[in-house]
Structure formats: structure tokens, C-alpha cells
Image (cartoon, rainbow, N blue to C red; front, side, top):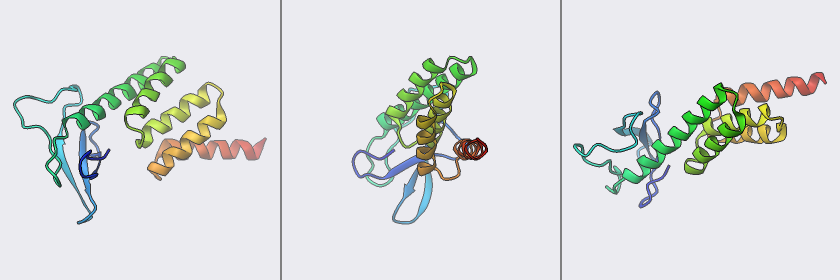
Length: 153
């Protein structure tokens, strides 16, 4: 996600689904901005709002969008576990609409498409996931399986 003022790129912090970190293009380092509770989509009124380290813009709305996207993704995962694939796809598509550059969201879209028999769409989603994260395990494994299946049939 990008700061709406200066365009600084923020990505999910490694190992934390509820915080964002800044990718500083000038110094080529990554800095954590502010951890958010994974259970709360509202920022605490006691703490100051998260701000861009570069231009000091308020990033509260950006964090809310990120949290809402994560919520939709988790709903999709829950529905997937119940084999409610069309409903899961709706939630995952909402997550993608809020945060398109998340590789995990694309990987899940591929899995849901494959489970509904839409294999071309699944491959496209997995390839998109790899554009955002070339190490995405789900996308890599699924594309490898598709390749093996195509060679054997």
C-alpha cells in the first residue's frame, strides 16, 4: 500500500498480519511503522495516529483498509475450511479490491478457482501471486502441480 500523499510504499511486516512496514526507497531499508491489534480494526484513541515516516501524513485510513482486507481474507479462509467456495471467493475478492498487491490473496483466489473447476483463472491468479511475491509457497506448489498434471495427461 502507498502513502496517499508522497507515495511511500508500505508492506505487511514479516510475521505480523496486523502491522505495516515502510520500504524506504532512498535508504533501502525497511522500518516498522506501528503495530496494530489483529483483532481490532479501530485505532486506539490513546495512541497517536500512525503517520508516514517520510511526509508525516496520517495513515489511519490506510491502516483501516489494510485491516479490513485482512478481515475479508480471514473470512474467506474460514469459509474455505467449510467448503463454501463461492462465498469464500466473494470475501477474497473484497480483500483483493482493498489490497490488490497482496500475494496471499491472489494465491487463495487461485485455490478457490481451482476448487470450482476454473483452472485457467486459477493459473492466472497464481501467476499474479508470484508477480507480487516470487517465493509464495501456495502459488509455487499449485503451479508445479498443474505442470506435472499437464505433462502426465
